[in-house]
Image 1 (cartoon, rainbow, N blue to C red):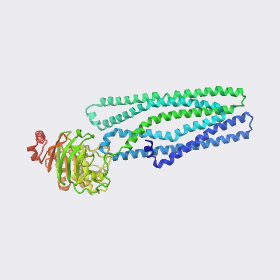
Image 2 (cartoon, rainbow, N blue to C red):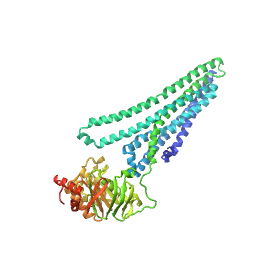
Image 3 (tube, one colour):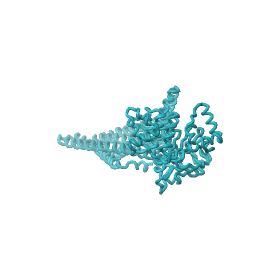
Image 4 (tube, helix red, strand yellow):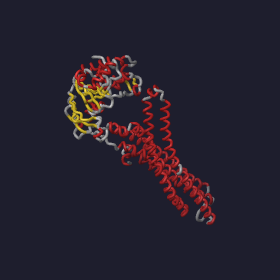
Length: 581
């Protein structure tokens, strides 16, 4: 885990190394100052002159300034190193997620990935700052202060070593119980983010069904469970404070009692007032170092679970990889499914696609219809290799999709998904997702084919109109048409529309299909639809049911031969949904 995380330090190695070096210098200065103070006190006791006092005073001022400079530099480099480390870590995780297949995303869930990119990285960032600064300072302060205390107090300093095992055992027992609680808490964080994400996305539905109170109750329950977890953890962690206080005051009682006895009994020969005052200072330094170490261990214990969750993402390998010598050109839009089975798990007995054997010619228009859950979307997702088949083979342009370079394949297979997503930015910027080098003329041509140009021209700034986050300032039908135009700009060999015209009226739908026929004659077009009139003029129509293609034919043929298709047709025509094209 540590090795993986260290890979994200990179250009901040220098700052990470300089921080503990400056911390060491700061600790050395702070350890020397009480020793000089002891010498000063003894000189005053012996009747030192003004010049001697000034000499020791100057030494203390110089040491304090050096210590201040070291501390300032340590803080500056610690902030640079930890912030840079967190920046790299976020970039590394985000880049890793971009490589993930849908199967990898499904494994973690989007809400969990958000938690890891935010809360978990913040925890690790703070832990890293503590490790390179406070976790270096605390043990060094203990070691140097103990050495100086031994030089001054001799056998009295052994008391410090006596409390170390007590503190160590106590902290270990506390941490062993706390870690599983934090592990549970971070899972609840994922659930909390999922609840927030779901509510915000569906806020219109929540308000439409007056479910605000229900959503608030659900959210409050999750927050309450999270609070209970952290309360349990905090109740255990606070035990470190009284444990430290007990050790601190036990040591102080011993030093005051035994130290006073030595001063009086030996008349300052074995321990003088100056040494005694410095010994008290070193006692505080040692026990504060131990107290700091306890707090560091507490926070690092919490951050350990965050670190493991981050490393889990960084070490995850995409289920989709490029071959050693990938094919870099898609010749045409020819598609073959040969004995294809697919399952979201590795269990072939739970296939969602079962024994698919079809051949789609380049330039052909294919309609796909079927009931909800018949695996229509899964079928088209395999073409652009968003998932890999569990068994069998899919060919595009006569070549197995697993032999292509992933970017090359997906660049030539344009998919307009069921859930239309546009991004904050101008309309032109959104459309250029399809082709970043597209000219204004090409953008307008694609928009006209997708029947988007008409409503764009009515907008205040036309193609420079800003789209709000999630496309909140455009309608569902407008988003669909923008997404179709974006896909067209890729100049694809294969165009897949996954129920992507459901929010447009039938007249606009007909114009879009007409544009496809006129401007994309050589592009293979696969259209998933719930309305038969959206696919009635397709070259062939696939009827899917329970993961199988049960019927294939033209609209007229299926009306005669397919029971499922004719039932759908009857239900839609009786409801007035079907218009002959």
